[in-house]
Image (cartoon, rainbow, N blue to C red):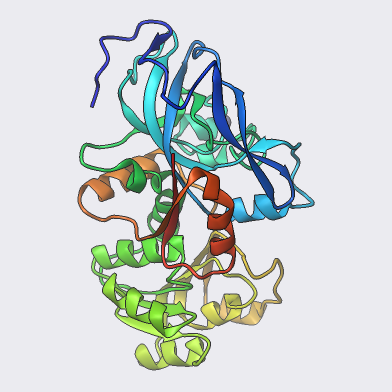
Length: 363
Ligand SMILES: [Zn+2]
């Protein structure tokens, strides 16, 4: 996909049609639950070690909803450009950048990691000791026409993968890849319980687990979602509003329990997910949308020899692995596409949980 002629300093593919008079569009959070589409100055040419990306698509995630609602503990100042997960095309490269060139299609890592600490050097950016911030949450994010990023933090999109699908790689796919394979070490032939299979990460977990030959049990909140979960590969779907999922999982597994539980719901389901595990089973969680705290039975924890993994974000390697899966045909489930000025409508839809899969914002 390289269309440039080399890595000339400050090389530009020409201004985007969206950029007029040095101004570009930016979706800006100005107060809790208040986002405005503003015109702001376009960034300067990329500095040494940076690339300039023309953003084409953004994936929405629950972290966007948290940021939009406002979080008392988050250290940040408004106004703030939103957008945590994005794909785009490189339109400029700074000096000393040899890893990519103008015309390359890329996704960007969603956090400004240092690149020099032990964790970063080992490729575990999500454990960076000096991580500055999460884009679109603590500092300005990707919902703008142009953004300058360290070249180190962009990953090329393979041929044949659209911007729209690729926009799900840095957070949704990357997070699930990291949870299932680095943390829970999910293996072919195992049985997994995926909580909230209609969510962006839940639907991704179903597809990734099914792709390696696992038996997938998932929970959903209504019958329409149950049908959709089956079409993307779930073997058993439980409507948690009409059935106790713990009991159904016991029955489905012949009282043995599952090897892995995939959690992100939190207090509403966490202890139930633990109860669904077989002895020595693994629970991996990356979120807690229903609250923050639970009471846990410690006797059960050690007698059953459960292993519990907290997981946040992913490594650059996980993003490459995710994009390779997309190139091989494992594509994200997309609920809705919304235009840039409908970003808030997308967030409201995500917050209401009336989604099956990802919401994508296109420019
Ligand atoms: Zn670091």
